[in-house]
Image 1 (cartoon, rainbow, N blue to C red):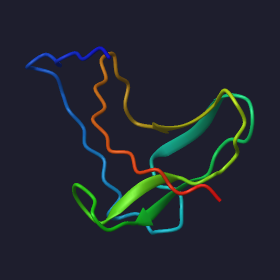
Image 2: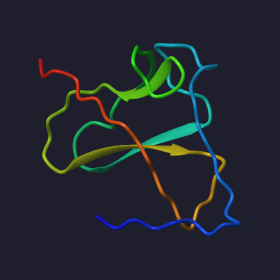
Image 3: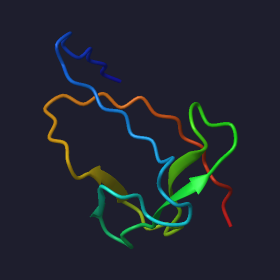
Image 4: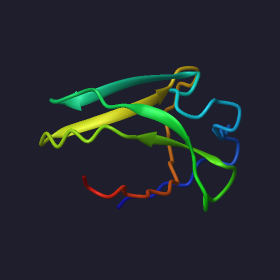
Length: 94
């Protein structure tokens, strides 16, 4: 794992999904996929026990294609250094 500290004069952004309706994709994001398989299904969900707020962005498609990486990209930001502290909660397999 490689960690970089952003410069002290670096801008920072924080996204939360509190204003986005649950059950729909969040505004201000585009979705893509690297590899093969389905694109993925990104929806805002209400979730208990989150680090902050009451809603999360969840990738809910269960396509098990090998070498498949659904991604959510913020539309309005161009970054040269990106540090992404995140929490992941796996959903049970069906």
